[in-house]
Image (tube, rainbow, N blue to C red):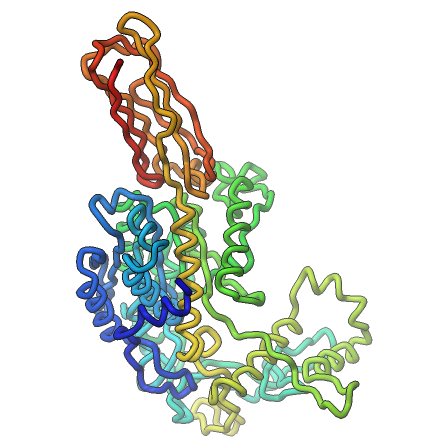
Length: 597
C-alpha cells in the first residue's frame, strides 16, 4: 500500500488533538499529556487484542509513562521485538507525535497491509511515546519555556533553597528567550552582517566583547546568577548509565535515580526479547552513522576491560550494520542534510547499545532545512550575509579562506555555528512567524542604567517543526520502523532429517538458520552478556544419545540466511520421537519433532 495513502487511512478518525496555537508559530497538532492519554486509550479500544498498554513508571508530576505493545497472536512477548522510545528529552515533542502516529499506523495496517500483517505476526513492537511527560508539558504552558527536567525538586545552586530562581517573561510575549546585557566585560558581540544574531568576540583578532548573554529572567535569590535554580530536577535523557555525567546540571543525584529512567530500564529487563531499539530524540546515528574508532582506554589499556574502562565507540564488527541502516533511513524517509547530534552522556540511545548490548538507532526526526541565502538578482557579485560576515572576520585577521579550508573541514569553528544561525533565522522568517524574537529593550531591576534587551530564537522551534509537517514526517518514519522490524533476527530449523545408520541407530541432522538481516547477536551484545544466546536443545523420549549434546549455546549466527549445521546420533526404538528446538528471546523460537524410522 502507498505510504501516504496508508497514513491518511490510519489517521482517519484519529487526528491529533489540537493544542492552542503557539506564540512562536508552531501550528496545531501537538498533544499535551491529557490528549496523549486519550489517544493511547482510543488506540487500545479500537484495536482490541492487537494492542496492549502498560504503565511502566509515574513521573514526579504524577503523570504515567506508558508502553504500548502491538502484535498479533499468542506468546507475543517471546518474539523478537523492536523498542521505540520517544521524548526522553523533554523539548523533543516531535518524537512523541511521530511515535503515537506510527503506533496507529501499525495497528490499522494489520489485516489491510500484507507487510504490516506479516511483521506483527512474526514480531512485536513496543512503543514508549513520552518518556519525560513532566518536561514535555512545559510546551503547553501559558509562558512557554524549554524544560528538560521532570517535576521533581532539587537545590541546584546548593543554597538550601529549592526552585527559587527560575525564568520570567520580562517582555510579556509569553516566551522565555534570552537577554543580552550591554557590558564591556562580556564575551559576545552582535554580528556585523545581521545584528540580530550573536557570536563570541574573537579576541585574538582584536575584537572586543560588548554583551553578556543570559536566560530571560531576574536574579531572584541575589547571588548574581540568573535562572540557575528553576523548576524541575532530572533530565531523563541524561540519567542513564553510559558516560553518566556526575554532578552535571539535571543529571540527577545518581544514575537511574529518576523514576522514568528506572521504569524504562525495568521494562527492558522484563522484556529480554528486545533485539533493537529506535530512539526519537536529539541523539542521531542514522544520518551520520556511528563508526568504529580505534582508541586506547585508561592508561593505554584496551577499552571494554576493567583496566581500560568503557568503550568510547562502537565495535568494528557492528559498523556495517549502522551504515546500512543509515542508507535505508535516508532512502525511506527522504531526509537530507547534516543534523547535529546531542552528546552521548547518560542518554537512552548510547545506554541501549553500549550497556544493554542491543542494536540501537536514533533519529532527530526533523531539523531546520537548509535554505538558500537571499541574493540581489541584479548584482551577481553581491555577497550573502554569511559571506559578508566571514569576509569581515578574515579581513580583521588578514587571512584568505582557502588557506584554512582543510582545517575548517576537520574542526568546526564559530563561523560554522554562525552559518547555522543564519540558516535558521532565514527559515523561521519564511515559515514560522515569531520563530525569532527581535531584540527589544526592557527595564531590568538587576541592571540599573544598563541597556538590556530580550530576544533570540523562540523556544522549541529549532527542534520541532510546525504541526502541518507531522503527517509527512510520521509517514517516512513508519517506513523506517517497518524496515527495522523486518531486519530483526529470526531463526528457523532447516534440513531436518533422520537417517537410519544401523540396527536401532539413527543420525539426526538439522541446520539452524537466521532469516533476518541482523546477526542473532551484535558484537557489543556478545561483550555485554545481556542479550541471550540461542539455546539449542535435543530432547529424548527413552532413547540413548551416543553422539552430540542435549543442550548447547550458540554464538552469533549471521543474518541473510547465515546458518550452522548440527548432528546427533541416537539409539532407540523405531517409531519413537525426538524433538529439536532452537530459541533465543532476541531471535525467536523454532522447534520440530521427528519420528525414528
